Image 1 (cartoon, helix red, strand yellow):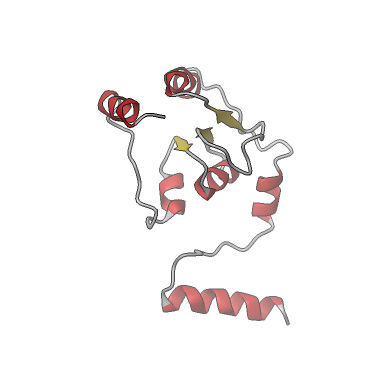
Image 2 (cartoon, helix red, strand yellow):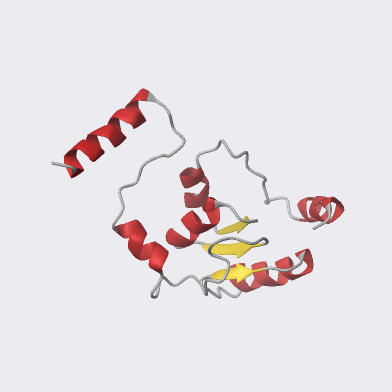
Length: 130
């Protein structure tokens, strides 16, 4: 992808935002209709959360039937129209291994180093080993 193409897309679609990696991804995903990603864990989190995911790059989940794989920016508008206007969905949770694992997991904020979060995680781990 060329930088100029991304700038053109940002000018055309005012509701697209680039998010800094330090932002809490759970809040971002919960407030999104569709998540566009290159190859981050946010794509997997979004898929688990039932959001439609448009993936531009290579990732461990790139071959999932639950995402929209994009090979060029030219495909993006058509895919977003299918999702937002035609309500076409790929992410239905049917046999989605991520969704099953998520439902059996304990949610923690991995990059939150606050005392409250560390205590919460430590207490959960202590309880699970009893």
